[in-house]
Image (cartoon, rainbow, N blue to C red; front, side, top):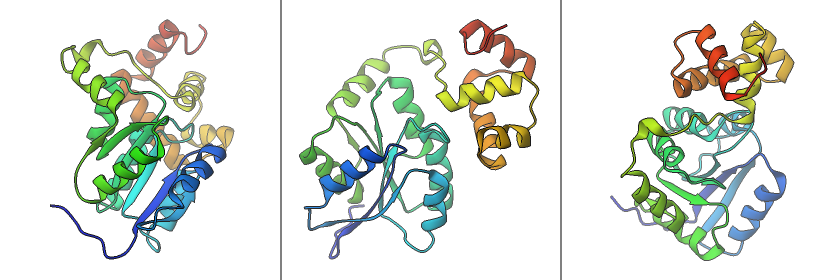
Length: 217
């Protein structure tokens, strides 16, 4: 169902790169029907802010080191189901787009999107309609004709770090202390890693990590 707005659409942005964060906010600043109410470099800070300052549309970076966009989208949608998510990424492989949509995103665009289409994407998602940039639409169309089982395992740089520490038999607390993140974030990374790799045990995960070159034997 479409939603009409008598007040500006409230927008939050999460991106671990400060320049991109400021650039996106700047691109939206001239639109009278849009209001940026929050800019965050970490998902946890956004989650703390949302109960008091809830956005309607969230621009979410897919490739973040601490907590990737897929897991972040799941947490955000579970905690704040009214938020509509536009995923932004430099990558648009079918498997990645598919995972973001499963996690609850309503749209997906490449970071090279121009201002006009970014504004259109936000307005479209706020009204209840999905949005995909041209490159993403092509990736979806191409991907639907290929077996999903053949998609390569894609771990974020942070997830690969966690795999390396798991291989060294670090506990969740030790991993959290070593990477300066929370144990909750570590547990989220672990779940994501085992889901993506389909490993049945730590031994199986380590064997896969060695074979893929994520860690050395």
